[in-house]
Amino acid sequence: MSVNDELSSRGIEGVFTRANAIGDSAVAALTSELAEIDFEMLDRQRAALQEELQLDTSAISPPQLVESSSAISENNVRALGVGEQALRDNRVAIITVAGGQASRLGFNGPKGAYPLGATTGASLFQMLAEQVILLRKRYSCDLPWIIQTGPGNHTDTIAYFAARNWFGMSSTSVHFVCQGTLPALSGKGQFMLTAADSLFSNPDGHGGVYRAIKRSGTIALLREQGIDVIYYCQVDNPLVFMADPTFIGHHLESNSQMSVKVVEKTDAAEKVGLVVNNNSKVQCLEYSDISAELQAEVAQDGKLLYRAGNIAVHVYDISFFEEMGEANLPLHLAHKKIKALAPGQSIASMVDAVKFETFVFDALPLASRVMVQLADREFEFAPVKNRDGSDSATTSRAALSNRAKVWLPQIDGDCQPSTSQIEFSSQIISGPQDLAYRKRQIDSGEQQLACSCGNKLVTLA
Image (cartoon, rainbow, N blue to C red; front, side, top):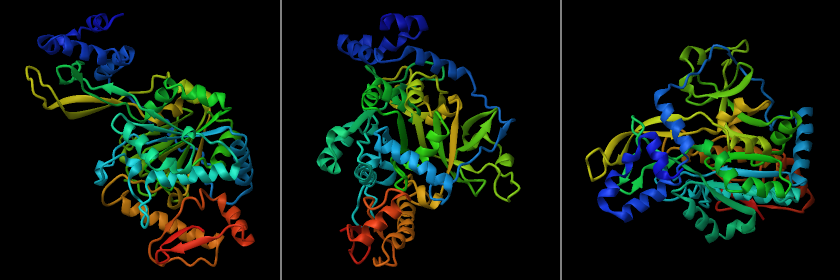
Protein backbone atom coordinates (compact mmCIF):
# COMPACT_ATOMS: atom_id res chain seq x y z
CA MET A 1 0.00 0.00 0.00
CA SER A 2 1.01 3.62 -0.50
CA VAL A 3 1.78 5.83 2.48
CA ASN A 4 -1.58 7.56 2.08
CA ASP A 5 -3.38 4.21 2.04
CA GLU A 6 -1.49 3.05 5.14
CA LEU A 7 -2.50 6.22 6.96
CA SER A 8 -6.11 6.23 5.78
CA SER A 9 -6.65 2.61 6.78
CA ARG A 10 -5.68 3.61 10.34
CA GLY A 11 -7.53 6.91 10.44
CA ILE A 12 -4.37 8.96 10.94
CA GLU A 13 -4.16 10.75 7.59
CA GLY A 14 -4.64 14.04 9.48
CA VAL A 15 -0.87 14.10 9.99
CA PHE A 16 -0.75 15.88 6.61
CA THR A 17 -3.05 18.77 7.60
CA ARG A 18 -0.29 21.23 8.42
CA ALA A 19 1.94 20.16 5.51
CA ASN A 20 -0.95 20.53 3.04
CA ALA A 21 -1.45 24.10 4.22
CA ILE A 22 2.21 24.91 3.45
CA GLY A 23 2.56 23.29 0.06
CA ASP A 24 4.08 20.50 -1.98
CA SER A 25 7.59 20.70 -0.55
CA ALA A 26 6.33 20.16 3.00
CA VAL A 27 4.10 17.30 1.88
CA ALA A 28 7.02 15.67 0.05
CA ALA A 29 9.31 15.98 3.08
CA LEU A 30 6.74 14.49 5.45
CA THR A 31 5.88 11.73 2.99
CA SER A 32 9.56 10.81 2.80
CA GLU A 33 9.71 10.39 6.58
CA LEU A 34 6.45 8.44 6.72
CA ALA A 35 7.71 6.08 4.03
CA GLU A 36 10.34 4.89 6.51
CA ILE A 37 7.73 3.94 9.11
CA ASP A 38 7.26 0.25 9.88
CA PHE A 39 3.47 0.22 9.92
CA GLU A 40 3.26 -3.21 11.53
CA MET A 41 5.37 -1.87 14.37
CA LEU A 42 3.18 1.24 14.46
CA ASP A 43 0.14 -1.00 14.94
CA ARG A 44 1.91 -2.62 17.91
CA GLN A 45 2.74 0.81 19.33
CA ARG A 46 -0.86 1.97 19.06
CA ALA A 47 -2.13 -1.26 20.58
CA ALA A 48 0.35 -0.91 23.45
CA LEU A 49 -1.27 2.40 24.38
CA GLN A 50 -4.41 0.48 25.26
CA GLU A 51 -2.69 -2.40 27.01
CA GLU A 52 -0.78 -2.60 30.24
CA LEU A 53 2.23 -4.90 30.17
CA GLN A 54 1.37 -7.68 32.59
CA LEU A 55 4.13 -9.53 34.38
CA ASP A 56 3.34 -12.58 36.50
CA THR A 57 5.96 -12.90 39.23
CA SER A 58 4.17 -15.58 41.22
CA ALA A 59 6.42 -18.36 39.91
CA ILE A 60 9.84 -16.69 39.97
CA SER A 61 12.91 -18.27 41.53
CA PRO A 62 16.65 -17.48 41.56
CA PRO A 63 18.61 -18.64 38.48
CA GLN A 64 21.45 -21.11 38.63
CA LEU A 65 24.71 -19.16 38.57
CA VAL A 66 28.01 -20.15 36.99
CA GLU A 67 31.06 -18.90 38.92
CA SER A 68 32.85 -15.76 37.79
CA SER A 69 35.63 -15.79 35.22
CA SER A 70 38.09 -14.70 37.93
CA ALA A 71 37.45 -17.82 40.03
CA ILE A 72 40.10 -20.55 39.92
CA SER A 73 38.46 -23.89 39.22
CA GLU A 74 38.56 -26.88 36.89
CA ASN A 75 35.29 -25.75 35.30
CA ASN A 76 36.72 -22.36 34.46
CA VAL A 77 39.96 -23.84 33.11
CA ARG A 78 37.94 -26.06 30.80
CA ALA A 79 35.61 -23.23 29.72
CA LEU A 80 38.59 -20.92 29.14
CA GLY A 81 40.11 -23.46 26.77
CA VAL A 82 36.85 -23.72 24.82
CA GLY A 83 36.47 -19.95 24.58
CA GLU A 84 40.08 -19.37 23.59
CA GLN A 85 39.78 -21.95 20.83
CA ALA A 86 36.64 -20.20 19.54
CA LEU A 87 38.65 -16.97 19.33
CA ARG A 88 41.56 -18.68 17.55
CA ASP A 89 39.11 -20.26 15.10
CA ASN A 90 37.72 -16.81 14.20
CA ARG A 91 34.24 -17.68 15.42
CA VAL A 92 33.71 -14.57 17.58
CA ALA A 93 32.63 -10.99 16.90
CA ILE A 94 31.97 -8.16 19.36
CA ILE A 95 29.00 -5.79 19.33
CA THR A 96 29.25 -2.68 21.50
CA VAL A 97 26.19 -0.49 21.92
CA ALA A 98 27.27 3.17 21.93
CA GLY A 99 24.28 5.19 20.81
CA GLY A 100 24.21 7.74 23.60
CA GLN A 101 25.57 11.24 24.04
CA ALA A 102 27.70 12.27 27.03
CA SER A 103 25.66 15.37 27.81
CA ARG A 104 24.71 14.02 31.28
CA LEU A 105 28.43 13.87 32.02
CA GLY A 106 28.97 17.49 31.06
CA PHE A 107 30.76 16.48 27.84
CA ASN A 108 29.81 17.41 24.30
CA GLY A 109 30.08 14.35 22.09
CA PRO A 110 29.38 10.62 21.87
CA LYS A 111 29.45 8.90 25.23
CA GLY A 112 32.19 6.58 24.02
CA ALA A 113 34.41 9.62 23.41
CA TYR A 114 34.23 10.65 27.07
CA PRO A 115 37.81 11.09 28.44
CA LEU A 116 37.86 8.71 31.43
CA GLY A 117 41.58 8.01 31.81
CA ALA A 118 42.75 9.55 35.09
CA THR A 119 46.16 10.56 33.67
CA THR A 120 45.99 10.29 29.88
CA GLY A 121 42.34 11.19 29.35
CA ALA A 122 41.87 7.98 27.38
CA SER A 123 38.29 7.68 26.19
CA LEU A 124 35.89 4.84 26.81
CA PHE A 125 36.28 3.91 23.14
CA GLN A 126 40.07 3.80 23.50
CA MET A 127 39.90 1.58 26.58
CA LEU A 128 37.72 -0.93 24.75
CA ALA A 129 39.72 -0.67 21.52
CA GLU A 130 42.94 -1.51 23.37
CA GLN A 131 41.32 -4.69 24.65
CA VAL A 132 40.25 -5.64 21.12
CA ILE A 133 43.79 -5.08 19.87
CA LEU A 134 45.23 -7.25 22.65
CA LEU A 135 42.75 -10.06 22.00
CA ARG A 136 43.43 -10.02 18.25
CA LYS A 137 47.16 -10.19 18.82
CA ARG A 138 47.07 -12.83 21.52
CA TYR A 139 44.72 -15.21 19.69
CA SER A 140 45.77 -14.34 16.13
CA CYS A 141 42.15 -13.70 15.24
CA ASP A 142 40.15 -11.19 13.24
CA LEU A 143 37.59 -10.44 15.99
CA PRO A 144 35.35 -8.01 14.06
CA TRP A 145 34.11 -5.13 16.21
CA ILE A 146 30.64 -3.77 15.46
CA ILE A 147 29.70 -0.50 17.14
CA GLN A 148 26.04 0.43 17.22
CA THR A 149 25.69 4.19 17.12
CA GLY A 150 22.60 6.36 17.44
CA PRO A 151 21.02 8.87 15.06
CA GLY A 152 22.47 11.69 17.13
CA ASN A 153 26.08 10.48 17.19
CA HIS A 154 26.60 8.21 14.16
CA THR A 155 28.59 10.69 12.05
CA ASP A 156 30.53 12.04 15.03
CA THR A 157 31.49 8.53 16.18
CA ILE A 158 32.89 7.55 12.79
CA ALA A 159 34.78 10.85 12.60
CA TYR A 160 36.16 10.27 16.11
CA PHE A 161 37.63 6.91 15.11
CA ALA A 162 38.96 8.22 11.79
CA ALA A 163 40.68 11.16 13.51
CA ARG A 164 42.53 8.69 15.76
CA ASN A 165 43.45 6.34 12.94
CA TRP A 166 41.09 3.71 14.33
CA PHE A 167 43.42 3.34 17.34
CA GLY A 168 45.82 1.39 15.14
CA MET A 169 43.23 -1.10 13.90
CA SER A 170 42.30 -1.67 10.28
CA SER A 171 39.31 0.50 9.40
CA THR A 172 37.73 -2.51 7.68
CA SER A 173 37.73 -4.45 10.97
CA VAL A 174 35.46 -1.94 12.74
CA HIS A 175 31.88 -1.59 11.55
CA PHE A 176 29.35 1.08 12.49
CA VAL A 177 25.62 0.43 12.46
CA CYS A 178 23.10 3.12 13.39
CA GLN A 179 20.18 2.08 15.57
CA GLY A 180 16.62 2.63 14.41
CA THR A 181 13.96 4.99 15.66
CA LEU A 182 10.29 4.78 16.59
CA PRO A 183 7.80 7.61 16.26
CA ALA A 184 6.46 9.10 19.45
CA LEU A 185 2.66 9.14 19.66
CA SER A 186 -0.03 11.06 21.44
CA GLY A 187 -2.11 9.24 24.00
CA LYS A 188 -4.69 8.72 21.25
CA GLY A 189 -2.18 7.10 18.89
CA GLN A 190 -1.55 10.08 16.61
CA PHE A 191 1.87 11.07 15.27
CA MET A 192 3.73 13.90 16.98
CA LEU A 193 5.30 16.57 14.77
CA THR A 194 8.27 18.81 15.49
CA ALA A 195 7.30 20.89 12.47
CA ALA A 196 4.65 20.65 9.79
CA ASP A 197 6.93 18.48 7.68
CA SER A 198 8.78 16.48 10.33
CA LEU A 199 7.88 13.66 12.73
CA PHE A 200 9.14 13.42 16.29
CA SER A 201 11.00 10.11 16.58
CA ASN A 202 13.30 8.70 19.23
CA PRO A 203 15.90 5.87 19.29
CA ASP A 204 14.22 2.48 19.66
CA GLY A 205 16.18 1.36 22.74
CA HIS A 206 19.05 -1.11 23.10
CA GLY A 207 16.64 -3.88 22.09
CA GLY A 208 16.72 -2.37 18.62
CA VAL A 209 20.25 -3.73 18.19
CA TYR A 210 18.90 -7.02 16.82
CA ARG A 211 16.91 -5.42 14.04
CA ALA A 212 19.57 -2.81 13.21
CA ILE A 213 22.39 -5.35 12.93
CA LYS A 214 20.33 -7.76 10.84
CA ARG A 215 18.85 -5.18 8.48
CA SER A 216 22.22 -3.55 7.91
CA GLY A 217 23.49 -6.79 6.37
CA THR A 218 26.07 -7.21 9.13
CA ILE A 219 24.84 -10.67 10.14
CA ALA A 220 25.32 -11.90 6.60
CA LEU A 221 28.81 -10.36 6.53
CA LEU A 222 29.74 -12.09 9.79
CA ARG A 223 28.47 -15.44 8.56
CA GLU A 224 30.67 -15.10 5.47
CA GLN A 225 33.65 -14.76 7.82
CA GLY A 226 32.70 -17.90 9.74
CA ILE A 227 31.40 -16.05 12.81
CA ASP A 228 28.83 -17.95 14.87
CA VAL A 229 29.31 -16.37 18.32
CA ILE A 230 28.44 -12.76 19.19
CA TYR A 231 29.67 -11.03 22.34
CA TYR A 232 27.62 -7.99 23.40
CA CYS A 233 28.45 -5.13 25.78
CA GLN A 234 27.71 -1.46 26.30
CA VAL A 235 30.23 1.33 25.94
CA ASP A 236 29.77 2.91 29.36
CA ASN A 237 31.42 0.11 31.38
CA PRO A 238 35.23 0.33 31.06
CA LEU A 239 35.75 -2.66 33.39
CA VAL A 240 34.07 -5.06 30.98
CA PHE A 241 36.11 -8.12 29.92
CA MET A 242 35.77 -7.77 26.15
CA ALA A 243 35.09 -11.12 24.45
CA ASP A 244 35.74 -12.86 27.79
CA PRO A 245 36.87 -16.34 26.67
CA THR A 246 35.76 -18.00 29.91
CA PHE A 247 32.26 -16.56 29.55
CA ILE A 248 32.20 -17.59 25.89
CA GLY A 249 33.41 -21.07 26.83
CA HIS A 250 30.66 -21.59 29.41
CA HIS A 251 28.14 -20.36 26.83
CA LEU A 252 29.34 -22.87 24.24
CA GLU A 253 29.65 -25.75 26.70
CA SER A 254 26.07 -25.24 27.87
CA ASN A 255 24.83 -25.08 24.26
CA SER A 256 23.01 -21.85 25.10
CA GLN A 257 21.35 -19.56 22.60
CA MET A 258 21.91 -16.52 24.82
CA SER A 259 23.96 -16.00 27.97
CA VAL A 260 24.04 -13.18 30.48
CA LYS A 261 26.45 -11.88 33.11
CA VAL A 262 25.19 -10.63 36.46
CA VAL A 263 26.68 -9.05 39.55
CA GLU A 264 25.66 -9.95 43.06
CA LYS A 265 23.14 -7.49 44.40
CA THR A 266 23.79 -6.82 48.10
CA ASP A 267 21.39 -3.93 48.69
CA ALA A 268 17.71 -4.73 48.21
CA ALA A 269 17.07 -1.08 47.29
CA GLU A 270 19.63 -1.02 44.46
CA LYS A 271 17.85 -0.06 41.26
CA VAL A 272 19.09 -2.75 38.90
CA GLY A 273 17.28 -5.26 36.72
CA LEU A 274 17.08 -8.74 38.23
CA VAL A 275 17.69 -11.95 36.31
CA VAL A 276 15.36 -14.68 37.53
CA ASN A 277 13.75 -17.93 36.49
CA ASN A 278 10.10 -17.35 35.67
CA ASN A 279 7.94 -20.31 34.64
CA SER A 280 11.03 -22.27 33.56
CA LYS A 281 12.37 -19.38 31.49
CA VAL A 282 15.22 -17.01 32.33
CA GLN A 283 13.97 -13.44 32.37
CA CYS A 284 15.21 -10.01 33.39
CA LEU A 285 12.72 -8.01 35.43
CA GLU A 286 13.04 -4.31 36.09
CA TYR A 287 13.37 -3.50 39.75
CA SER A 288 10.02 -1.71 39.59
CA ASP A 289 8.33 -4.96 38.51
CA ILE A 290 9.19 -6.77 41.76
CA SER A 291 7.73 -5.90 45.13
CA ALA A 292 10.03 -4.46 47.78
CA GLU A 293 9.19 -7.42 50.01
CA LEU A 294 10.28 -9.93 47.39
CA GLN A 295 13.48 -8.01 46.64
CA ALA A 296 14.37 -8.02 50.33
CA GLU A 297 13.82 -11.76 50.76
CA VAL A 298 16.88 -13.51 52.20
CA ALA A 299 18.24 -16.94 51.19
CA GLN A 300 19.57 -19.61 53.54
CA ASP A 301 23.13 -18.29 53.12
CA GLY A 302 22.06 -14.93 54.55
CA LYS A 303 22.36 -13.12 51.23
CA LEU A 304 19.56 -11.72 49.11
CA LEU A 305 17.56 -14.48 47.47
CA TYR A 306 17.19 -12.43 44.30
CA ARG A 307 20.72 -11.19 43.85
CA ALA A 308 21.47 -11.57 40.12
CA GLY A 309 21.79 -7.96 38.95
CA ASN A 310 21.88 -7.51 35.17
CA ILE A 311 24.93 -5.66 33.76
CA ALA A 312 24.10 -5.85 30.03
CA VAL A 313 26.83 -8.29 28.99
CA HIS A 314 25.73 -11.16 26.77
CA VAL A 315 26.91 -13.89 24.44
CA TYR A 316 24.70 -15.14 21.60
CA ASP A 317 24.50 -17.91 19.07
CA ILE A 318 24.41 -15.92 15.83
CA SER A 319 21.29 -17.69 14.58
CA PHE A 320 19.36 -16.73 17.70
CA PHE A 321 20.59 -13.13 17.43
CA GLU A 322 19.38 -13.06 13.84
CA GLU A 323 15.98 -14.46 14.84
CA MET A 324 15.59 -11.68 17.37
CA GLY A 325 15.90 -9.20 14.51
CA GLU A 326 12.36 -10.19 13.52
CA ALA A 327 10.98 -10.96 16.99
CA ASN A 328 8.21 -8.87 18.51
CA LEU A 329 10.00 -7.87 21.69
CA PRO A 330 7.78 -6.15 24.28
CA LEU A 331 7.35 -2.43 23.84
CA HIS A 332 8.16 -0.34 26.90
CA LEU A 333 6.33 2.96 27.15
CA ALA A 334 7.60 6.21 28.66
CA HIS A 335 5.19 9.10 29.15
CA LYS A 336 7.29 12.21 28.59
CA LYS A 337 7.15 15.89 27.82
CA ILE A 338 8.62 16.49 24.36
CA LYS A 339 9.09 19.57 22.21
CA ALA A 340 6.48 19.17 19.49
CA LEU A 341 3.46 20.88 17.95
CA ALA A 342 0.39 21.01 20.12
CA PRO A 343 -3.02 20.82 18.39
CA GLY A 344 -3.79 24.11 16.62
CA GLN A 345 -0.29 25.50 17.26
CA SER A 346 2.40 26.33 14.69
CA ILE A 347 5.33 26.67 17.10
CA ALA A 348 6.68 23.67 19.00
CA SER A 349 6.29 23.65 22.77
CA MET A 350 6.57 21.09 25.57
CA VAL A 351 3.65 18.69 25.21
CA ASP A 352 2.68 15.27 26.53
CA ALA A 353 3.65 12.27 24.41
CA VAL A 354 4.49 8.59 24.65
CA LYS A 355 7.92 7.28 23.66
CA PHE A 356 8.51 3.61 22.87
CA GLU A 357 11.59 1.43 23.14
CA THR A 358 12.63 -2.21 23.35
CA PHE A 359 15.15 -3.79 25.71
CA VAL A 360 17.92 -6.17 24.71
CA PHE A 361 17.32 -8.46 27.69
CA ASP A 362 13.73 -9.16 26.66
CA ALA A 363 15.16 -11.79 24.30
CA LEU A 364 16.14 -13.96 27.28
CA PRO A 365 12.80 -15.79 27.73
CA LEU A 366 12.70 -16.47 23.98
CA ALA A 367 15.89 -18.54 24.18
CA SER A 368 15.54 -22.29 24.63
CA ARG A 369 18.62 -22.35 26.85
CA VAL A 370 20.32 -19.54 28.80
CA MET A 371 23.53 -19.59 30.84
CA VAL A 372 23.83 -17.07 33.69
CA GLN A 373 27.33 -16.26 34.92
CA LEU A 374 28.24 -14.33 38.02
CA ALA A 375 30.67 -11.43 37.54
CA ASP A 376 32.89 -9.91 40.21
CA ARG A 377 31.46 -6.42 40.58
CA GLU A 378 34.78 -4.89 41.68
CA PHE A 379 36.56 -6.34 38.63
CA GLU A 380 33.91 -6.13 35.91
CA PHE A 381 31.33 -3.43 36.52
CA ALA A 382 31.75 0.29 37.11
CA PRO A 383 29.56 2.11 34.56
CA VAL A 384 29.80 5.80 33.77
CA LYS A 385 26.24 7.05 33.83
CA ASN A 386 26.16 10.15 36.02
CA ARG A 387 28.16 13.33 36.34
CA ASP A 388 28.50 12.97 40.10
CA GLY A 389 27.78 10.46 42.84
CA SER A 390 27.27 6.76 42.17
CA ASP A 391 28.05 5.31 38.75
CA SER A 392 30.02 8.41 37.82
CA ALA A 393 33.40 9.05 36.22
CA THR A 394 34.86 9.40 39.71
CA THR A 395 33.65 6.00 40.91
CA SER A 396 34.61 4.34 37.63
CA ARG A 397 38.17 5.73 37.72
CA ALA A 398 38.52 4.53 41.31
CA ALA A 399 37.33 1.04 40.33
CA LEU A 400 39.81 0.90 37.44
CA SER A 401 42.62 1.93 39.77
CA ASN A 402 41.65 -0.56 42.47
CA ARG A 403 41.52 -3.43 39.98
CA ALA A 404 44.90 -2.44 38.56
CA LYS A 405 46.46 -2.52 42.03
CA VAL A 406 45.18 -6.08 42.50
CA TRP A 407 46.41 -7.26 39.10
CA LEU A 408 49.76 -5.49 38.93
CA PRO A 409 51.61 -7.47 41.65
CA GLN A 410 50.46 -10.68 39.99
CA ILE A 411 52.31 -9.89 36.76
CA ASP A 412 55.24 -7.67 37.78
CA GLY A 413 56.42 -7.41 41.35
CA ASP A 414 59.08 -4.86 40.39
CA CYS A 415 56.65 -2.23 39.11
CA GLN A 416 55.81 0.06 42.01
CA PRO A 417 52.91 2.36 41.11
CA SER A 418 51.78 5.40 43.03
CA THR A 419 49.87 4.77 46.24
CA SER A 420 47.22 7.17 44.94
CA GLN A 421 44.92 6.53 42.00
CA ILE A 422 46.61 5.04 38.95
CA GLU A 423 45.74 4.45 35.31
CA PHE A 424 46.49 0.99 33.92
CA SER A 425 46.55 0.65 30.14
CA SER A 426 43.93 -1.73 28.74
CA GLN A 427 46.62 -3.04 26.36
CA ILE A 428 48.22 -4.89 29.27
CA ILE A 429 45.32 -7.10 30.35
CA SER A 430 41.84 -7.61 28.92
CA GLY A 431 40.73 -10.06 31.61
CA PRO A 432 41.95 -12.56 34.21
CA GLN A 433 43.04 -15.00 31.50
CA ASP A 434 45.87 -12.58 30.63
CA LEU A 435 47.49 -12.52 34.07
CA ALA A 436 49.60 -15.66 33.65
CA TYR A 437 50.28 -14.75 29.99
CA ARG A 438 51.68 -11.32 30.88
CA LYS A 439 53.65 -12.66 33.83
CA ARG A 440 55.41 -15.19 31.57
CA GLN A 441 56.27 -12.44 29.10
CA ILE A 442 57.62 -10.13 31.80
CA ASP A 443 59.55 -12.86 33.62
CA SER A 444 61.19 -13.93 30.35
CA GLY A 445 62.10 -10.37 29.39
CA GLU A 446 59.91 -10.51 26.28
CA GLN A 447 57.77 -7.65 27.61
CA GLN A 448 58.25 -4.90 30.18
CA LEU A 449 55.95 -2.47 31.93
CA ALA A 450 56.63 1.23 32.29
CA CYS A 451 55.56 3.42 35.21
CA SER A 452 55.46 7.13 34.36
CA CYS A 453 53.80 10.41 35.31
CA GLY A 454 54.88 10.10 38.90
CA ASN A 455 54.12 6.38 38.79
CA LYS A 456 50.44 7.13 38.18
CA LEU A 457 50.45 5.59 34.69
CA VAL A 458 51.31 1.97 33.89
CA THR A 459 51.75 1.02 30.23
CA LEU A 460 53.56 -1.49 28.08
CA ALA A 461 57.19 -0.40 27.66
